[in-house]
Amino acid sequence: MHETHRLGLFSRERWLRLLTDGGFEPDTITEETAEDRTPRTFFAGRRPAV
Image 1 (cartoon, helix red, strand yellow):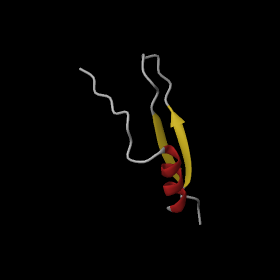
Image 2 (cartoon, one colour):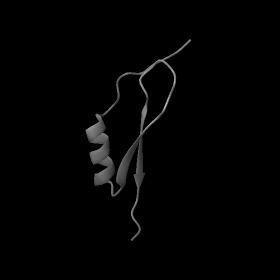
Image 3 (tube, rainbow, N blue to C red):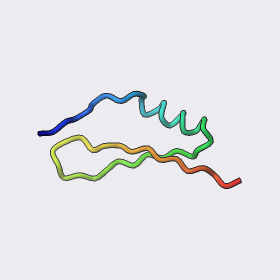
Image 4 (tube, rainbow, N blue to C red):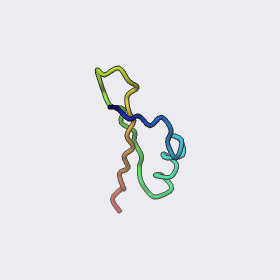
């Protein structure tokens, strides 16, 4: 049994803007997979040192 979610709460652009607005330097990581499916994208944010 597999469950796939194709919809997200926010668009990619909105996630990046929200992370930026929160003081983070955003980045995206797209997984590498050999499976027959669309690779997932992960969002990461690094807070700059003060």
